Structures are given as C-alpha cells and as structure tokens.
Amino acid sequence: MSEDPSNAGDANGGQGGGQVALLSDPVDVIIDKLLSVRGARPGKQVDLSEAEIKMICLRSRDLLIGQPMLLELEAPIKICGDVHGQYYDLLRLFEYGGFPPEANYIFLGDYVDRGKQSLETICLLLAYKIKY
Picture 1 (cartoon, rainbow, N blue to C red):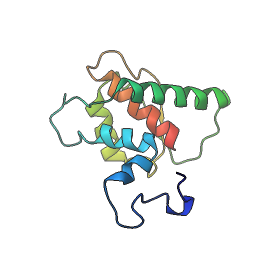
Picture 2 (cartoon, helix red, strand yellow; picture 1 turned 30 degrees about the vertical axis):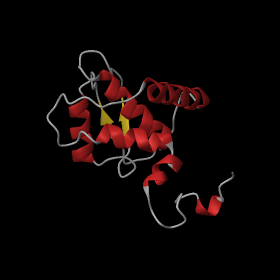
Picture 3 (tube, rainbow, N blue to C red; picture 1 turned 45 degrees about the horizontal axis):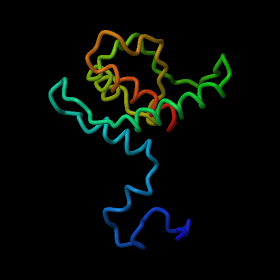
C-alpha cells in the first residue's frame, strides 16, 4: 500500500495518532531520545539501539566524505573546544547558546574519551550534523 505524499505528515488522515512517529525521519527520533534526558540528573543513560547508532554512523560518514576538506562557514558561529564525552556539558552548551538550528557551532575535536557518555555525545553531534 503506497502513502499519499501530501498526507505523509499524518498517518491517520488528520486524526493525529501514534503512527505519526513511524513516518518521521529516524534522525529526528534519535535526537528526541537524546534530548529526553534534559533536566534529568547527570549520568542518566539514553536508550539507543545498536541499529540507531549504526544508522547515525553510516549517514554521517556519507555526509562527511562528500564534504570538502575546507568548509566555508557563515558567521555568527560558536566555537567549542574539547567535549571529552561530557554529555551533560554538551547539553548545557546548547542550552546557553541555543540548540541547532537556532545557533551555529563548530566543534574542534576530542568529542569522546574521558566521559562516561561518549556515545551519547558523538551521536547527538552527528545527528545534528545530518539534520542541519
């Protein structure tokens, strides 16, 4: 059964319902999961499946390979240093500076290593890279 593209935003023909998430971009679903811990105690884990993490890695790999080595970026842009897998620090940066696409960021490296939530950190950064 094929879906009518004009009705792709709502699986129930305007009724609203549980199936709308099925038609959402999987990256949006992952971003929602990753942001669901905002306001929670630091260290609360995000429940991402292996398939979701692989999808983020594959899509971001294709995107990064297709980009030139030198990016021409437009101001204003917030320059951020090493995050080191500190997921709640990353969320705090976004809370203070604005979440994408409201603000533009460039992260200089060291996304993962010391922090206990390196996976959440890199997944959120890559998901935003894919989306915006």
